[in-house]
Structure formats: structure tokens, C-alpha cells
Length: 182
Image (cartoon, rainbow, N blue to C red; front, top):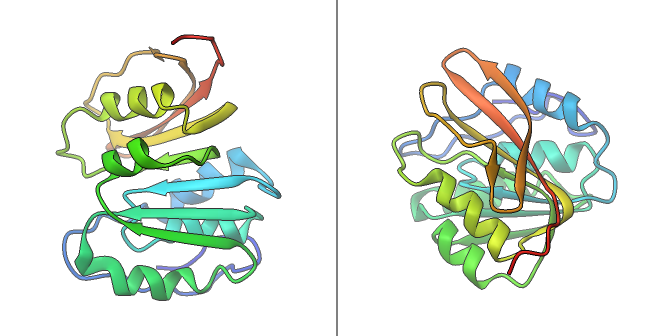
């Protein structure tokens, strides 16, 4: 795999052993083209795998990138790959995504989720992100999922803003509406 744009463009990313479904180059290029310049933004990469999405964010100017991956087999490769993002502050957490969301005190401008396609309750993860206020006001959450899954247009304070199809998968963009729901 390689970084598709920004200051680390064409740098190679190692793929860890085990089950991994790296985001395809076309989807990553499109997603980051939509996002534009990320200078000064904080980026949370959930279900990080190799870390390619977070490194792409750093390559495009994200000031900080946090990686969360549960699979300890992927840990060493993730740490090695994250070193590429030398111009950004990086943090890596090897823990379940749900536990990270419940325990973090940080807020992120952009959150990306690429959960295993068979994972159930993906929409509940977005609801948890919204309820725990992990997303900065008016921040953006993106989730990559199989095209056959049906999604609501609103999840707690998150409202669907854009939807892009890439082969048999879909990338949804949800914006925090900052409603004062308790």
C-alpha cells in the first residue's frame, strides 16, 4: 500500500498480518479530496489496521492523529507505520474502539471508522461518539461500510451530509449538528 497524496505521497505502508481490509486507493483519494486541506485538524482513525487512513490525514496536514486498533497482532506494524507521520502528533491505543470512545477526554475534528464489515451495531458506535461528545462541535464523522447496509440519515446529533459509493462499499459523511441533547 502507498500514501496517495500530501507530503508523504507515495511512501509505502506495511500491511500487518491477520484479517485486514485496507481502504482502497480510489476511496482514500476521493475521501481526502472531499476533505481538502486538514491543516490544524485533529483526526481520529478508529479500527486503524495498518494506519494508512491516519497517515493520509497527517500527510494532508492534520496536526494530530490518534489511532485505535484492538488487534494486538497489528500493533508493531501500526507503530512502525505511524512513524511516517513525523510532522504530526500521533497517539496509538491498542484497545476496543468502544472502550476508547467511553474513556477518552479528547475531542476530534474528524473521525473515520472502517469497522470490519461483519461487525453488528455500527450505527450504535456513531450514536456513542455523539453522546460522549468525542466529536468537536460541527465536526465530521465518516464511516466505511458494505453497500447493502441501510443507514438512518440522523443518529443522535449527527446528520448525514454526503454519501459516496465505491464498488460494493459506501462512505457516509455525518456532521455534528451540535444540538443540546442530553
